[in-house]
Image (cartoon, rainbow, N blue to C red; front, side, top):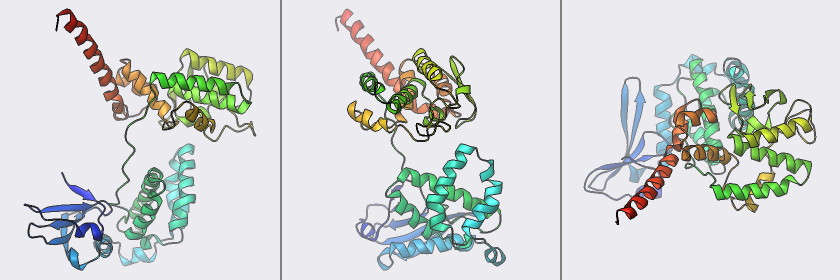
Length: 381
């Protein structure tokens, strides 16, 4: 299995020879590595994919060069060999102008409104401040990598999502002929959060008792308690409940006009139907859960009550989204087939649902153990 780590000068100096040659690959620049021979020599190497195959390069002994210098050399090699011609470079627009012009017209406008809102936030908060005033052909890999690493220190998941957006924008710039190669190509995402926290039955009962207490509080607390309960009862995504329209409530189901995977139907169990029946009788207007300060708008923020509730219930490591995981895990543990779980959650790809297969397996293993003990006792084993 390939060895990978973030290469540093100190870390390279600590690499020790082994019986056979090995290479340690950088997690920042794809294709950059340090080859360590049995003799003890350490050499920078760089493998770059091209249309004609893999081009292999050497940057000499690691003892004579700083790793940051080698990274810059790799970036220059990647953009130089595949770079755009001079005419393209001369007319490359500023990043902000390209985003507001051709990219917006040809890519952004095709997105769903909810996607546009997320993309607009990532642009305004992160990408435009970092790259807006730069020409597309002046955005280098080292610049993008430095921005990504700084962002990753505080929000690794959001950094991944914003990096994906930057990659998509620059891919479109390549397609438009403004640059010859995407400088973001090869920057590796941060490792994802490990799968998956969900509530046990005992934790669900504790959460229920805490929500009961808060449901007797202010109108805002009662509304937030209902939102949390619906997320747990339906497995819906947070936005699907926060922006739920009264016209989408159809008795024993929700007919969502727009979700992450497009229009979908959510079948409601009895407790969910009761919460929504009460909300439909008590409320009016467009939204099932309107803003407390402006009822003409939906509730825009997740229920902040959640942070108090989970502390009081002793489940502080549980995210609001983990309530959706809980629905899936309980379905899998109770023998619901995975294709049905996929439809229950509105997954467009059953590969997403396969994450819960091992949950059902554990329940089957436990049942097998219980049966084995009973039969074993009858056999005198």
